[in-house]
Structures are given as structure tokens and as C-alpha cells.
Image 1 (cartoon, helix red, strand yellow):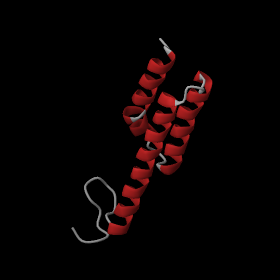
Image 2 (cartoon, one colour):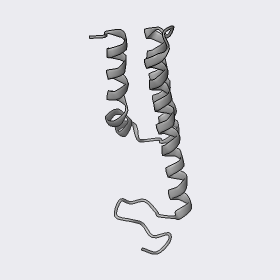
Image 3 (cartoon, one colour):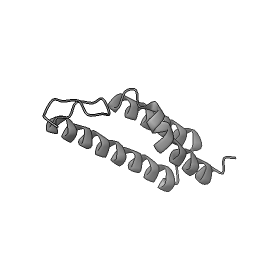
Length: 91
């Protein structure tokens, strides 16, 4: 497919855009991993603070990837919720 053409997914494919997308996705993964690590390991972190961190992570993800809330809710929200339930015995 020639540069600048649209793939079947509807997104233009340019190597530079692909690289930027990969970098943003990697940053998001690192951010989620860090948030989960802090929630799991910080003995002084309260439930409200942990919940706020999860909410802030979602807000940051949506700032990086507007219109991808469904993807976040499918990929990351269940992991964060499970961690909060396990850590704080939330039913």
C-alpha cells in the first residue's frame, strides 16, 4: 500500500505516525504498570487515593488517546478494578 493511502481500518498509514502511535501506547502501558505497582505495593496508600490514581490514569489515557474510552474500559479498567478489590477487600 502506497504511503498516504488509507488502510481498511480507515487510518492513514505513515511510518512516522505509526512510530508515534507505538511510543504513545508504550507510555500508556508503562503508566498503567506504574499505577498498578504503586497500588499493589505502597502500604500507606489508602483506598480513596488508590481509586483516584486509577481514575487519573484513565483521564491521562483518554488525553493520549481521545475517543478510545471503550478500549480502556475493556483492556485496563478490569485489571485496575481487580487490583483494587484484592488490595482493599472491596466486594
